Image 1 (cartoon, rainbow, N blue to C red):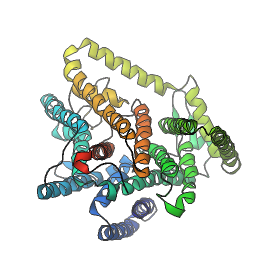
Image 2: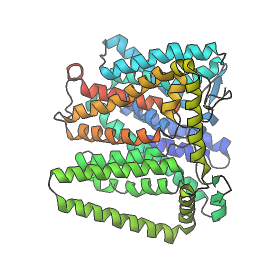
Image 3: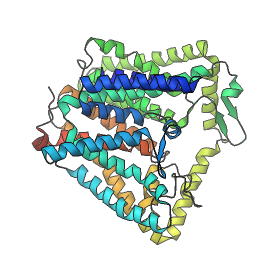
Image 4: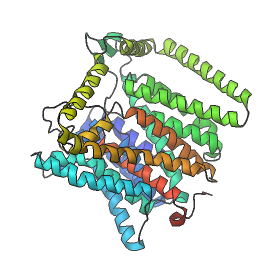
Amino acid sequence: MLGVALVTAIVVGVLIATLPSEEVLVGFAGVVSFLLISFLISRSDTTCVLLAATIFTTAISTTFWLDHRISIGEFPISVPDVIVFAYGLFALTKWFRDGHARMNTIGALLSAWLLYNSFFGVGIGMRAGNPMYAVLQEYRVVLYAAVAYFATLVLFQKERHLRAVMLSLVGAGLTVSIWQLAISVSGLGLRLEEMVSVNQNSLGRQLRDVNLPLYFAALALIMLVMILEHAPTFLGKKQWYAWALVPVFLVAVIVSNTRAVWVSLAVSICVLLLHSFILNLSKRSLWRQMVLAGACIVSGVFAYIVLRMFLPTMSEAALTAWDYTLSDNDSTSFTRLEIVQTLLKSFWDDVPALLSGIGFGNMWSGAIREGPYTNLHNTYLAYMVIGGLPGLMLFLALWISPLVSCFRLLRRALSPIVKAYVLASIMSWVVFSALLLSIPPHWSEAAFFGITLGILTVLEDPKRYGGVVVN
């Protein structure tokens, strides 16, 4: 109920805000959203609402939030900023009232990462003369992850909140999928040349929102399959209807004509098939594996036939984008590789910068200065630019830590729900590990990272949180 209501609130608000007569209809959308969220607060746990709101706002286009924000002094404030602040403040009041919350290895690594970036990343950025606004805008990727992590340690109770988190992840994928499908449907009357325009060194794609994190559709697909595979009672009698969401996720990703999103879907399908193969192999269910492989082939052929019959122009646009990606004319990938090579060479020639980084306030904040890092689409190298080799090493250690926790958890006797969440977390980690090679750090997703780290800390610490078995 929680996931469905919040999805409804956000989708209604987004769709109405994009219709004509915006000044009149936005007010109606705000009233609908306010009533739904008020209903949730009165009928549900406040922590559930804050967790769900954080996850859903993560899945909304960053451009949408930037276009709908207010300024307090020199600092523009958007909805994700308010939600993270509310989540942290609520946790702080509970911490003062109820006491402490222990940390494990993940918490120690995150604390070291936070302190290093707070002193060196912020300090070097300020010393370089970067505006305070620019420094703080970029510092959010670290601050929000830390706030969400410590707030989750204090507030999260697996028996009450894990279900809401899992449903919210599926709902977030549904939100971005509906958003993309709405964009695609709005352009059904366009010609192929208007949907996808191929120039000499570029590919123009009309029917997409470049800032929409559509890879959440792939993560939702993983979570949904893990729920249906390992916790069939999670959705009760509605589990068979939930399979109807799979085509929504798949079609939305395909028609997005976005390569990073295609990669997320391909990696997701690969890890799901690998998981199914290992699962069925351990059960010696070779016939089931053959049925699954046949079902995947039939589904793929069916999807292709449907697209060709009912959406021929759109399928042609997807094929055009795919052909361009594989051609020698696609200069985007080569340009980004050249940026990485230039960046590494510049650091090799400037050892002090390699060791210390250049701090916050230089890349995606708007206070861009000349350098090979201005258009860097690589999260790993972005943290090296900010904090040098120590900053990169700290991030890599923190990034690997949830994977270690997940494998430790799998050695224990887990309830079906916890096992589904842990397996989905491993697969999502694989998907994001590939994506981070081609996308910069996103401040709007930082809190989601912190929540994930916090949940795994709670599940792994039986002394502090009373074990990992959920009834």
